Image 1: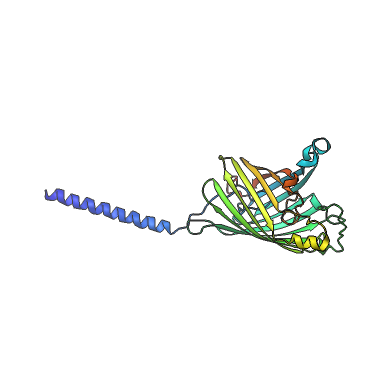
Image 2: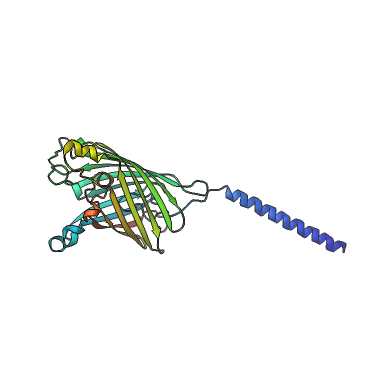
Length: 308
């Protein structure tokens, strides 16, 4: 009986010690940050950027198309499919949190360069991911902007062709299906299409995605520009030429590719165009069908190909 009692006490003591050890280990593990992965599947949401960067030594090749307006008719323009604007772009991951990118758009024959850095990552210790973005573009049209028909604006120097933008991208992966993002934005144009337009522009974007299946995702994006159309119209006697950019679409992930199919009222595919110079209006049928294709290549010899 004495031996049995001793064994019972020993067993209880050992079990309690194991429970205490597990409790200590769980407490220590809870102090370590657990980072959220794949808030979005690509570094772009639709027109605009997402908070995502790409892995170190990986290269993204982007092909973006915007066809003509749906309301251009069947006979004259086959609902816009007879014409298209294109942007070709490259992004390279300097680190897992920092990328650089460049592209060329046929719209206004514009070249753009940008960089994006992930400042904070969503985890069990921090509620959101925060990424900073800065970009520059040059319009190389010989006679100025092509956005507005009848424009008589001309560039006098190369410096007048430049525009700049900065964004803070803030996103939260709410659950496995839903991710949301806000995008405070500042734009500056060295020269605008009309002297009555402001050179500086503040805007706020909101967007998100909802995952339908493992490979299919619904996405949406809206940018509101803080302008004063009434003052412009009172000063010039003309209607304000630009509208807020609204886009909806679906993402399809297939291996190393991401296909983004969407409808938008903007033909521009870089920030200075779609945030500040969207001329289409959804209510008038100025809707452009488009798509983005992203292909990821790995230059990391020590790792296998990794898809975002």
